[in-house]
Image (cartoon, rainbow, N blue to C red):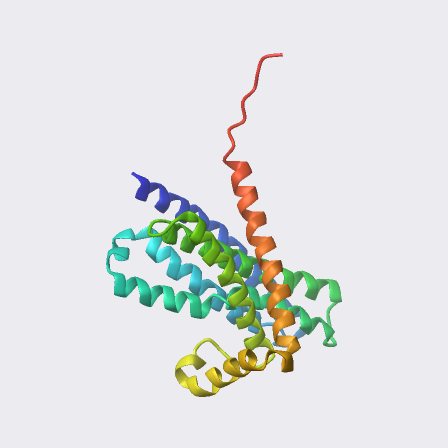
Length: 229
């Protein structure tokens, strides 16, 4: 019964996110046709990458029997953690507003914000799935603590992607170079103030978003009772 409820919720969630995604695709294609430039078409690829962690966590939620296979679960969670920073990464595409454009700045602002919010939703909903999965195996307090830490870890991943230009799959293609850059930031933290400034501030911001969504969810679960006047 509970599994059927989760499947129903996931179906509604999928429709909702699909509508947002198609809207983002639509306005990016409109911009391409109107300007005959491919300037922001890459946002669709970034949005797809933010979809990956949501798809992975949804797989474990819809088919809970998969969680009985510990090795498979660890592989899926590892892949999820690898791709999760792609969700908040789209926020940094706001930097591209500095580029000269043949459309009004407000249009490009709405375009990027639409992609960024949809990407954040993919990420935050998938993180909520992960917290639910963790809570089945460890105390909820520790599951929540891990999620808070993951958001800071994702912020560090955003830094690696935006400023050092590393991709999620470079852990396989160029593991030594990637790990060398990461180790240098930890061994010489004061030599890389940008890395830790971005990690801390974005980590706090992402936690603000995550906990805001949890508060909204909590309020929506409160049953409203009315009394006769």
